[in-house]
Length: 515
Image (cartoon, rainbow, N blue to C red):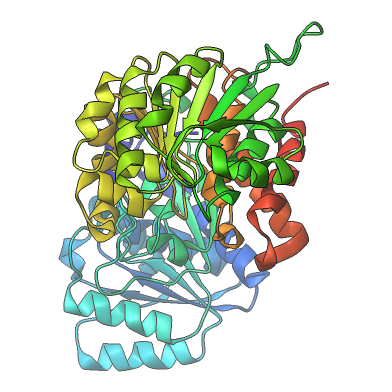
C-alpha cells in the first residue's frame, strides 16, 4: 500500500474529480459513511449517543458535516460547532451545511464568547467528539482560536475520532506545533499519510483505519508516489523459495566484523540474528584477545581471531586479512560493538573503500564516516547503512531534532548523495533507496526499545541477503525484525531483550513462507 504526502493526496483528489469525473461531493459522501462507521466503532453504537462535531470550513469540515447526517439518522444526538465564517465554507462543505441545516441539526459558529461557553457545556455532556477541524491542510503554527478549540476537545477527556489526520498533526512529518487532537481513532481517506507513522503525531492517531472512498485504484497505485508500506503481503513477495538442493554455502555466507573490549554482545547478537534469518554460514571476525569470550558465547557461529592494535581493539593490522577473507563471503556486516578507537576508525574507512563484496555498515562503523559520508559513494556495491537517528544525525552533521522536522526528505538526500540504502531506526523504522523510494513498516512496538535491538536488525538484513529478491533484503529484514519483535512483545511485554527477538525471527519468517 502506498503512503501519501499531503500534496500527493490533493493531486489524487483532483485527478479523480477532473480526469475520472468522480464528483467531489461523491467522494465526500463516501468518506462520510466510513467516518460514521468509525464513530460507531469508537462508541460501541450510535443510538442515543451524544456526539459533538467540531468542523472547519474546508473539505475536512465538509466530511464532518456530511457524517453528521448519518450519525443523526442512526439515532445519535448531534451538535455541530464550526470554527470560521459561513461564507468561507468550500462549495462541497456548503452543500452539506445546507443539508444539516434543513435537517434542523443543532449547529453553531464559534464567533462569540457565548458560542464558546455553549461548546463547553455540550462537551461536558457528550459521549464522543468528531474532529473535522483541519485534516491534511495543516502546516506551521496553529491560530489561537484553533489551538483553543483543540485544547478544549482534549481537556474534555472524551474519545475523539479524527478525520484523515488529527488536527494539528503535520501529515508529512508527524510534527506538532503547540498542540494537536489526541484521537482515540483516525479514519484516513484515500491513502495513509506518511506523517501519521512518526512521533509525536503518531501518538495522537490512535487506531488507524484506511478507506479509499471510491477513488479509482489506479490513482492510489500511482508509481510516482515513492512512499510505500512494508506489510505482510509485500514481505511475502520478497523472499525467494528455497530449492530442494540448497546447501549452507548457497543460503548465504555472512562475515560479521565487530566487537571490542566490553562490547562482545553486539556482534554476537548480529551473528546469531543472521543465522536465525536463514543464512547458511556466519563467521564473526574480532580482535584476537576477544576470541575466547566469543567461543563461549557462540556455538553455531564460527569465530575468526584478527590481529589487534591493542588489547580488544581492531586496527589497520587487521585490514589485509579482513580484505582477504571477505572474498569468500556474500556480504560483510561491519560495525556492531567495534568501538570508536582512532585506529579502528581508520581501518573501517579503508575496509569499506577496498572491500569487493556488498556491505552493511552499522553502529560505530558509521561513526567513522561522520562528516565524510560522501566517501560511501565509492563503495563497489551500494552499501546498506543502518543508523538509529542519533547515528544518522552524527553522520550528517545535524541534530536529531533537525532530522525529525523532515526525516523523509533529509534521508532521501543522503541516500542519493551516498548512493546507499539507509535504514533509519526509530519508532517507525524506514528504508530509503538512492532513487528516492521510501518504505516504512507499522509492525514493531515500544518494548523493542532495548539494547541490542539494532544489532539484531543488522544481522537480520545480512542473513536475508541471499534469500531475497535482489536489493530487497533491507525491506524483508525491516518487516521480519519488527514482526519478531511483536511476537516477543506478545509473550514478554516490556521485559523483552534483544535475544528474545532473535529467537522469534524464524517464526516471523515461517508466517511468510507457503509450504
